[in-house]
Length: 444
Ligand SMILES: Cc1cc2nc3c(=O)[nH]c(=O)nc-3n(C[C@H](O)[C@H](O)[C@H](O)COP(=O)(O)OP(=O)(O)OC[C@H]3O[C@@H](n4cnc5c(N)ncnc54)[C@H](O)[C@@H]3O)c2cc1C
View 1 (cartoon, rainbow, N blue to C red):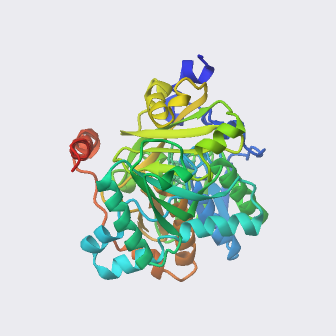
View 2: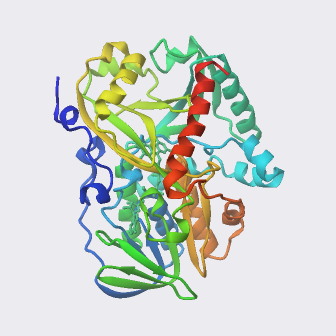
């Protein structure tokens, strides 16, 4: 059946592409808690910390700083949670996009030790905030990495050993039979169950975090795109109709920051990924397909990720498009993956389809640091952002409050600009991706 989502599919993902500052037409936006429209910044404001961007990175930074007694002003170009944070797969994936062994080889044992000691903290922060502030965001526990073949299963075995060495005690390897206790499909050779993972309604989480920031005295301005940041001892942040003078500035625009801060422009590349939401299914069907209610991501280079929702839909995401383009036919792109996973849903109605951009770094490690003076930034979680943004927000708050050690463990890691500059970075990255996809196809 053709639904609005199926006919229109390619809702553009950026205000730049549509001129729309409203949320993407996602299942999340349709089921979001009510949230006030915050007025744009007008005139001059003085504050302790000005945060740019109201996704998880910005909101969690602001929240931790407000808890520590700082006056915080957040400037958001569109709406709170408008970016990746309000439209992602909602999966609390532990660890980083690069495994800790590779981090050790590249940056040394001490860097791996420091990052390893924080690799599971982001999910804990989410659980803590949800509990402490009673944020209603449908948080559920449990996530599954699913392997298509023995090679991927061996990699998961290795990941289990590595994570256990850093203190993770909630992992269980599954073979081709036991994985069916979690997801009813014939696709997989096995998997790794992560009981410390989980899933969440991400837009409701970030909107809840915004309410906490405000309850702690912080101010949020929506429809307030930052056009320029004057760096220096006392930085000044400019929007079309106002400016904020702050002791510290934190840049959290991630894949959507664009050209506002030229020094950060080529350090990450926007990459789009898409999600569809099926019609509500019979509860019995959901319980049969997801007996334990966990979320799933597979181990392919370009992966599928999916999970059940509180209203018995399946949210199914996948695909990556380097450069951050929104495809014309999202349903056409994802339906074959949904059908391959659950053949009985081949013709299921799709009620929502949307796209969003995350930010990739060349190293696949989050990029945090300082520009001139007290101007901090964090971005480039490379697809693992739900948990890592929450860690980053805490680390930046610690650094501003005089405890920079853990932030510096990330800030000291070398980040490289994408080769080829604006014109060639997409084709060069695609070449790299084809190499990995070809290896995957021939089973290497
Ligand atoms: C479709 C999709 C699915 C994903 N699924 C998962 C998943 O299941 N699990 C997972 O771990 N990660 C996932 N990710 C990645 C994750 O969502 C992101 O890494 C994370 O949300 C990034 O948060 P952020 O706050 O840094 O950026 P964003 O949430 O993108 O927020 C940046 C904000 O900054 C604002 N902004 C930008 N420029 C300016 C400016 N000049 N002035 C003012 N404001 C500005 C934007 O409007 C935006 O609201 C997914 C991403 C997408 C797109």
